[in-house]
Length: 554
Image (cartoon, rainbow, N blue to C red):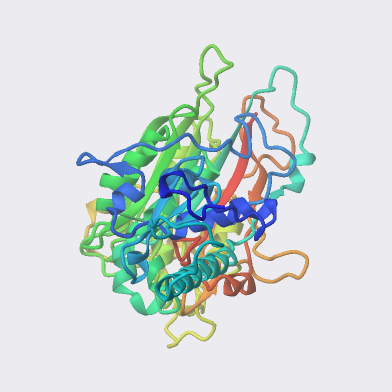
């Protein structure tokens, strides 16, 4: 009992009788994260300090997988990201000062440690049997107990706000692969994340989409540490990020990820918008062969007048077991964010044609084969829409197709304008197979020629044979998976596509293929409604990150 003991020698109040041992740590974690003083600079709360804003992240928790392989089933995600709390207060819970001024009261300090210490008046008192409490003391104790119960109630309500439950789903094909030929046992496992992190400026420009959100979860000072902690938690080898705001990238995101061992490549949009795409990879596991920004804007072309961009990297695995890296082993990683406008499917298809042509150019080998490709991004198109079908089947017959039907974002698109044939101008220098042809588009910058007789029917193709890493329906009820959610919509628009390994064993030794090992599960609309949609206290974007793991092998 602390009664009559000087404040400097008082023991913390033990709350273990309120909470079972299994939930006591979660309560303290929620308490510490909820009561961070809001007056601290945003960068300090995100893991930066001093005028230089240099990152000082603490060591990340052990990832779900080692560098070699996943366990059969990674553990479930915690209700909040441990890395975020490591950034704030370290691995152990030291005394954390909490000021009631943060909640509109006077500036009297509280403390949270292994128990919970509440400040009481520093007044020498005799044992209770020797004197009665004064009216003032009774009033003080009443308000103290009231404030104590308020803190407990608030913390319990916050702890009940859990994160989305996402589990690891092993790929069935990972258990039924062809045996490797003798001498060709080389395999390289790597993980890929695709994540639209929601540009802060775009959030503010489209505030009507986030009226359902608590105002406290929208500022960048809250979102940045959550996003960085989420990236650190998943520990992917390759990150493909969209809506990366340039100033945030240069001053905060890039330094933080470099401190975690990543190398960063970035391409800003060509117009006045402040964001762009980034491809970021662990330099300990992969080496950069080339970085190729892709601009979809074509001055003078009435169709390609938007500022969306892409980024294509060639990466070579760092094989620590080999004396010399295999020059034939490399991965083509592409990232993009296509136009949003649901009624301009013609622009989306033309932008996609440019990206596919660049991927084909960079992934092609001298023998006519194609290196493995991973294509990530926000395509602003739904599963089984014409644009999605074009990506996954390699062809699209668009005769008589309405422009507003291409992306599948609207069930009843306005207007009846049809896709023209051809969709894009010959001066673009890309044929109907989404490959560069000669002469290039620069030789005819403004003339729009009708070359449909070269294409035959109203049809476009590509030869990459892409496959989605996700099935787009939840098992066992078949509900749609959701990757983005705000006040207007909830749907899938984000994808990780890849070129799968050979359907039959390769006839030529030395070829490389990709095998999907597993993915992080998505959720449905009802699960998102239970956590008040996106963004929320745990998830700081209006998109969910996609996470997959592949094996590159001969």
